Image (cartoon, rainbow, N blue to C red; front, side, top):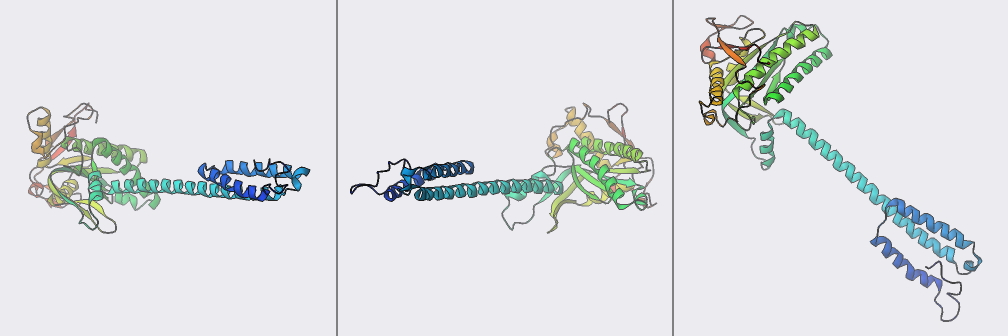
Length: 360
């Protein structure tokens, strides 16, 4: 409206000078622009429109005596301020969005790393603890653990490039990880070419069903055989299974990880080292835990006796996909020829065999 004032606006004693009109119009324009903030592109359109209008008015003889072009430049400059403000605001919003996106990605990445270091329920427990509190520890009364060790891998690794060895372990243990996810097993740790996993009460795993751990062990043997054939390498595996009490807790300050401790772990290692090649060896306690779970499936036992065991979830529609055979040897012998007594693992031990046609 200021630009369209008639040429006689500032003529006569009682007329209002055009610079006063500009002074009155500018705050109104500023208030409107601040109340209805435009994005950067719209602000640029305003600047272009003002520039065109000033250029047109500058060529009209009737406006040259009023100084409209010079005062119009004031509006143009003010519009440029709003455009700059819109640009800075939009850039700030983009930066904030990118920062939030990066933070979310980092959070997801960190949570993914934590889930590989400790059980999910333990992570939740840590997040709820006050700063400076001691790391949590847990007593497990009904844990069933499995430990495997590759046969011939150490000698083979000495003849292969480091890249091949690392990739081979990554491929095989990656399949073990997929099986652990399928059977609801928690991977405790890997030590060299040894793989330790299992189930227990909360917070270690949501489900505590000993037959699932045994089926997982049988699958480990199958996967190792298949991988060995595909790699054209002579690699086998020994698997030990044990049930009982143990303690779980977070160890370390800089590189913390959730570990299991106790006599159960030592005996599990002994069961693994004396297991038959490409076979499973289970302790008497493991066999009893599995049979008790089977009794619960048939309604002959109470799940409360298993320390809060979750309702069983048979795999492939089968609860009895394997059977136990008592070992006939008078003593246990490791691959290195070391002799051990059955009493060191709590009594007689059993090899585990898949039932033909069970889908394992």
